[in-house]
Length: 315
Ligand SMILES: [Zn+2]
Image (tube, rainbow, N blue to C red):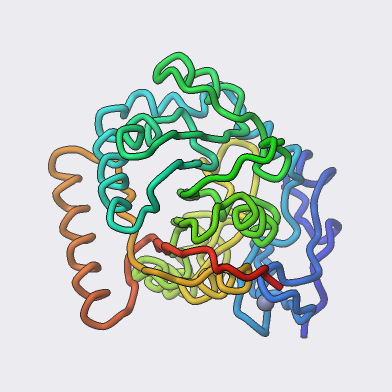
């Protein structure tokens, strides 16, 4: 087994923030195994040999990530694409109607609040959390929402519980996914429903093709490592900072180990596009949905898991 990378192993062209303040992980966040090895040294990607969880290590500190997501310009594109994003969120609301528990909804990392605005008619009450100050202001201004400020673990909910909890493309951004899922468990009411959507950036057809191309030299053009994943930087060249890379199986295992039973697994229709680009995306989504229904294989770019809180206390 290769030794774990250390901050000193970061390459000289890393930004100052990353060189000065990094977090090094020596234990698998999903199964707690210490059997962690380097998968791709060029982009600081590690994998747990026991459960297959793939993650960035070392990676930026939580403090630097909050600053990164709080840049006022971060949500400009969301506003510019408001109409197309409305379609996206309406679709997600419809997708959840069949499995939701009657009552309240808490959306974690809700951004500017579009999802909550569309979900409001279907739930008794809606709530959201957000770490970005600029997003919190926009949510109040555009949708009249008063969001909880901060990470889920840091917020004082004053004993309140929720009947439904949603994590749309949040889990891959946080430094401790297991702690976040356990917090979701503690905040949900009895038999409450948890919805998690993440990128399928290891098992999707695109990811598989990318890995083959990277082995053939494509990585030199697109600044990704030999495994097809980018090396993290906060210099603005990456729009998103993904700290974890889940397969559908690893995500299900994480939820089960944190006290949930799986109700449904599928694809999360995530794209924001119009015209011809939308038609192309819809066709790809439809093809992957059919493959998933027939063969239970997820070739799409995202994974959606809907789970219910088990009654007993998680181990
Ligand atoms: Zn593991």
